Length: 621
Picture (cartoon, rainbow, N blue to C red):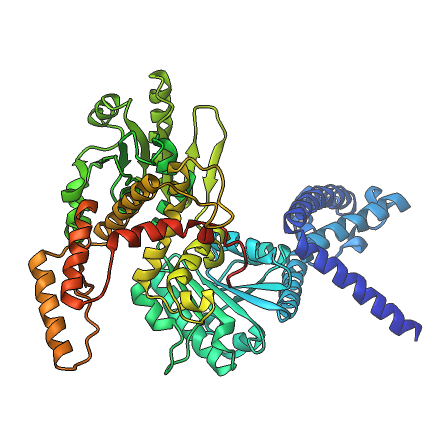
C-alpha cells in the first residue's frame, strides 16, 4: 500500500512539474539554458580535472572529457573513471558531481517534459471547452486573438481556435489565456475527431471565420454548417461572422425554408467597417455650425489620401455623412495611382462625381501638390482621411500633416488614419491617440454595431416578428440603408441644438421650420447613400412609363407589385431629385396609382423617429 502511495504521489509531483513547465514556457526556456551552461562548465571542470589525474595523459584526458560531458545530458555518468581524484574525493565534491549531472539531465529532459505538459494542458482545455456556449474562431492571427480574448470575457462561454497548423509556442500561449486549439485536416474540415471534441449538440454556437485568406473562411463556414446540421443544432442557436460581400455570401450560408444554414450571417468588409468607425470617431456634423432652424452655416470640405479599398470606402462614408441643408460637399482625393485605382468606383457609382464636388489628383500625401492644396484650404477643411493601405505610411503622412497644421494654427482640421488594423485619431500634436479596432465586438457584433439600425428597421417593419427576426430577414441593401440612416441620427440632435436624446417623441418637439430643414437634410443624406451605392435618378418619362404599365396590369386584374418610382434591378430611383421637386413627384405617383404619398413627409417622419431609435439600449439578440 505504501509503495502504491509513493508511486501515486511521485506521479502527481511529476505531472505538476510537467504542467508547470508547460504553463511557463518563457521561464522554463531561460532556466533550461542556464542549467545547460552551468552543467557544461561544471562537467568540463570536474571531468577534465579528474581525467588529468587518473589517466596521467593529457591527450587521453582531452579526448575522454567531452564524451563524459555529453553523457551527462543522456543520464550517464563516469564516476568510476575518476574515483579517488581531487574533484570527487570529498563528500562535497561528490555532491557537486551529482548536482552537475542532475542539472544536465534536467535541461535535456525539460524539452520533452514541456512537450508532454503542453499536450496535457491542450487536452485539458479542450475538455473544459465542452461546457457552456461555444465560440469557434477559424484562423490564428492577431485579429483572431483579439476577438477570442473579448469573447472569453463573457461568462459561460468557451473559445476554441481552429487552424490547419500552429506552433507549440502559439498553442501554449492560447492555452495559457484560457482558450483551446484544434489543428489538422479534420479540424479545418469540421470532421472526424475534431467534430467530437467540439461537442456541438445542445449549445449555442458563435463562429468567427477570420483567416487572412478570405476564400478559406467561406469553405470552412460551409463545412462547419454541415457539422452543425448533423449535430442537430437549431439554426437559431448559430451565427457566423466573416469578411466578404454580404449580398453574395449571406444567401449561401443563411438558413432558409428549404435549406439548413446559420441563424444569422454577419458579413463585413474591413474597409467599410473602418470607414464607419471613422465617422463615429470624427462625425462631420460635429464640425459644422447650424442656425436655429437646423440649417448648416458652413460647407463640408474634406480630403482623402490613398484610393485603394480603404480610401474609397472613406470617401463613400464622408459623402453619405457630410450632407446638410444649406451646405455644399467638397472633397479632394490624392493618390499617385488615382487614375488606375478609381476605375471601378467611378464606373459603378457614376453619379458621385456628377452630384458632388469631388476632385481626384495623381499625387500622394507627401507631394508638393498635396501640401499646396491643403495650404490653400486651411480655413475650410474639416477632415483629412489618410488611407494608403500601409500603417507605417499612414503614420508618416499623418505625423507630418499634424506638424504642418499646428505651425499654421489649423489644428481644427481632423487628421484620421484608416487601415485594416482600425482607425487612429489624434486631436493635436502631443494629445492622446484615440483608436478603434475593426476586429472587436464593438464593430463586428450586430447587437452592438447595428443596435440602432436594427431598431430603425423594426420601426418601419409592421410585422409581428421580434426586432432581431426582422433584421435577420433583411437583404444586404436594406441592412446597409438602415445602418446609414441610424448612424446619421446624432446629426439631427446636433443640428437641432439638443444635448441629449429625447425620452419620447413628445420631447422631440421640433418647430415647423426645424422639421422642414431636417427633413431636407435627411433627403440629402438618403440621396447620397443611393448615389454612393450606384443609383441614378429615374427620369420623369421612365416614371410615367412604369405608371402606364402599373395601370394596365391593374385594369386586367393581374398581380401588380411594381413600384413606379424605384427600379432596383437597374438601380434607378425617381426620388433622387432636389427636395423642392418631391412634391411634384408625389402628385405624379398619385395620378398613376391612386395612392396617397408624400415623399417629403416620409423624410420628416424618419427624423421624428429619432427618440425610439437612439434609446434602444435593450439587448436585441
